[in-house]
Image (cartoon, rainbow over all chains, first blue to last red; front, side, top):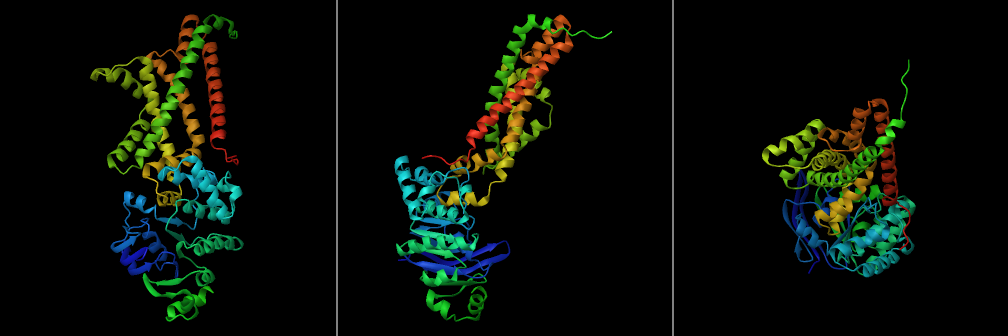
Length: 242
Length: 224
């Protein structure tokens, strides 16, 4: 059974038909890269998967729960799905440690000592064990993004959604973030990424989903699809980004 | 022939002056604390999903910002008893100050809230926080910090505006100055001393607020 199941999902922004019948299944432990030009609907699709964005038709089932934008449902979903954003979105008035401990203590009622231990653990995992008491503004973009990943991991999600998480970073900082993702993938974490990192999609990803004009245009095993694209649109896209 | 200053004559009234000053301090502390709370609630109501709260908050702000403070004060003290709501001068004075400050702070804090990056709210939702938790934990603290200097200025304006409650016989600093000059006719000296005391209070208030602010908003590394 798939962990995430997207069935014939349609989405409109006013008159604009941004998702035109998306079907997608992601199994536990899979690493799926969603690629495509800007405006192809890939970020919208990702944001529909955890209820940040509503959809007008079809169904999305995540970990057995129907996804919707209803607050109660979003809160329930947050136990199973984490999300990391392009713009990090750390809370500027909280230290790195407090950023991470916030959700476990508020939502899961983890006691403070335990939350602290957990926060330290996930920080070590992303290589920032020494930044616990630091405020986000003192960190580089790459470090902030790794804290954001750690913050998501502290909720022990079954699937992590990553929305262009390296796009706002200076090129020399991208590697550290990708390394963390690679390690997560190796540990069996389910990852769904909207990304422009073709090398990462090929080397670490299991599957590639190429979106074009609101539809899944081509999909399949990452290495095969990227080495031998079947449609002219994907061929052209790969030619443009590589 | 010039006017001869006679500050010495005020000394005999120093108790009146000091008790007036003390009343002004009390009015200011109470109305500042309650006014800030009201301002936060007003700002929260402005983004509530219930339209009655949203529009109610907006109407409150417009009503208070577009009418004179002294009319608000007189309405509370002289008008409300007509419908059975009676209170002492001090209670009426505090209520008027709180309602007035609350309206201005609602608007100031709302402006700070409007500048919250949308992504932070989305991140908080994704982590499973409820709307209330998001407002209290994620939106409010940085918003309050963004507009802190405006909040401080508004609180000082209200401290100065508390002079108006002397008009309903609250025995604060301006009332004391009025009283003294009506006895000894030393208007120049009485009001000058009152003005200097207000200046001192404003200076102290800013100092205290700045101390609180620099502690509360410090972004120095925390030892865990």
